[in-house]
Image (tube, rainbow, N blue to C red):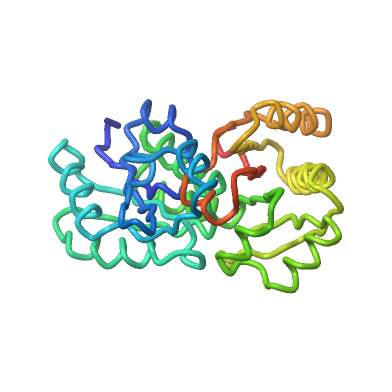
Length: 288
C-alpha cells in the first residue's frame, strides 16, 4: 500500500502486465468472456489469454461488461484493506461501456473519493496509464496531481497494432465486410490505432503481416522523437521471439528509450483481434 492510501484499480481490458499487477497491488475489475453453452468466465481470473486462444478452434466467444456487483466488491475490498481513495483506470469509452458503468457506481461512494479515468485506449496502451498511476502514488504524488498527470498521459500515449487474421475484427464490427474481403484477397494487413476519441482506426495498409510490423516500428520511432525520453510497450500474444525482434528493431532506431515493457494481450482484446495480435505503444517518460 502506498503512503497516501490511494487504491489503483483497473479493468481487465487494460494490460499493465501480470507481474506489475501483483507487485503493486493493482485491483482488477474483470470483464467477462462468454460462450454459447452458457458458460461465462471472469477475464484474467477464471480464464487466461492462452485458454481463450485455445478455445478459438471451437468457438470465438463474446465479451461483456463487468457486473455492477464485481465493481462494488472491488471498491469495498479496497476500502476494507485500508485504502482511503481510489483511481479507476478503464479502457476507452469509445470501445466499451465499462468506463460509463464504473463511473455510475463510483458516484455512490461519497465517503470514499473515486476518480474514473478514460484512457481512450486499450490493452497495453491503457496499461501504461495504470502503471504510471501506481508509480506516481508510490512516489507520494498528491491525488489530484496523479489525476492531472495521468489525464495528460492519455493524450500522449499512442498504440499501434496488427493481426494476421482479419476475421475477428470483421466479426466484432471493427472493420467492414469490404475491407475484410479486399484484405483477405490481397493479403493486406491494416495497422490500427486508437484515435483521440478512443475509436479504432486504420492508419496504414501493409502488404503482409511482416510489413505491417515494420510499419508499427516506423510509427513508434517517428512518434517517440517528440519526447526526450520514452517508455515503449510491446504486446505479442503468441510469440516472444517476435516481441524480442521488435525490441531490437526499435532500439536500433531510438536512443531515448528509458524502458521497454513486454506484455501479453488480455483475453477480451484477443476475442476481437484474434490470436496473433502484435502491438507497440509509446508513452513519454514522466519519471526522468
